[in-house]
Image: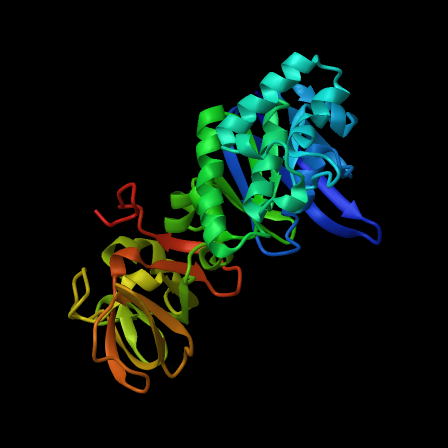
Length: 381
């Protein structure tokens, strides 16, 4: 196995379209790294450049200690799993998995051992004589994984491999891919647009936008301490709520003025926000950090705003309550299920001030204050 290093990698298409802009990324040996972002952010192009399927415009790509800029894909010692599975329809499962090994002119005995070992790991031994058309989507995905495993590559590359599966199967396959990584202990680079996949699979996560890496770190670190408003709004389901307002000073205290109400600036953020008094700012609040007084698991005093309930979505033991103020029309609270709340009501909802974030104004405003006093699960301490 080997790490993967990108240094100042740029990809510019014809017409001057810059798809990837000065990507610097160091993936360590045996690490599972996920590239995530909206469509068109450059994540798949980055993966294809690592694979050698796209030429880089400038910069350097290393796999292990070897610079691979001019190395053909077949000689990079990588294995790629595609969204479309890319199985040969006229070949059996065994033949699909063995194909790359035959090209290497391995002995029949070695090929048989490698294919059957991979099939055992993936629990598809009973499918080796079938052709792809006789397989379900999940079975085809396992075959595609098996074809990659038998090659014993330095690095596994996954390009949105679960996009064609239904929701239930996606969750199951996600767990299988993570368990497979833990078993093989292989360097893995995985591309997805699904932020839930990114958070559950990656040892570390790269969040991309418009060809630029926005943040790189552990999933929980990014979730609880997003670098900017884009990252904060991209990771999380439902996404983070944003209140646009102004930092003001009244009665010897700092407040966040939302327009139709005020929230006190918590003590941990005061020093960070002193220079922002009188300036526009954005308050970020995760849905799980908003609750009514009866069900809140945090202190409730002067940290509430008046909301109109616009929609209630039951989710079993939880529910999403959609709220609005005079200045913000779409705020979501993810709370314990309880009765008595209906669309059209006006309710007081409290904000957990230990878990809020402050950003500069603008769609991609940089973080200006975040509470670092949290445990490994992100809970305030």
